[in-house]
Image (tube, rainbow, N blue to C red):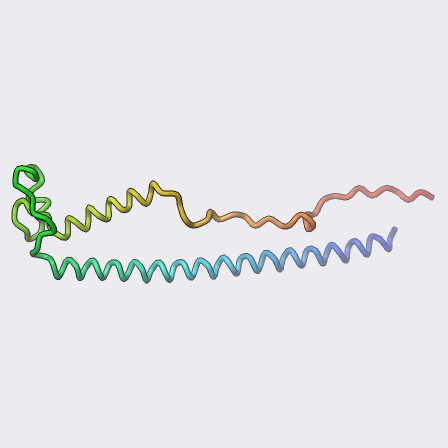
Length: 137
């Protein structure tokens, strides 16, 4: 009986160390994935922001579209901000509308990134209490 306990304790320590190694590897992997996502996301946002600034600077006095005055009657001055004529839609307003619409559409779509899950330990490594019967002498 004592020999079995020692064998069991050794195996249990080995299982515990393997579980700890597994958890360490999983956390290292998730940290690496987060770094990549933050870096790529930051680069993309920077490029998009700079391209929007360039687009506004280059086309600040040119309208995106010209509409009849009666069609834009209550919002005409707001739509032509900052330097277009009444009845024209400026690049600044157009970019704001496109960003708002795209944000609303993307919030309606299901997320493409998987939800974070807790990593479960495979079933052979689950620690359960094992009933031990007394020896039959």
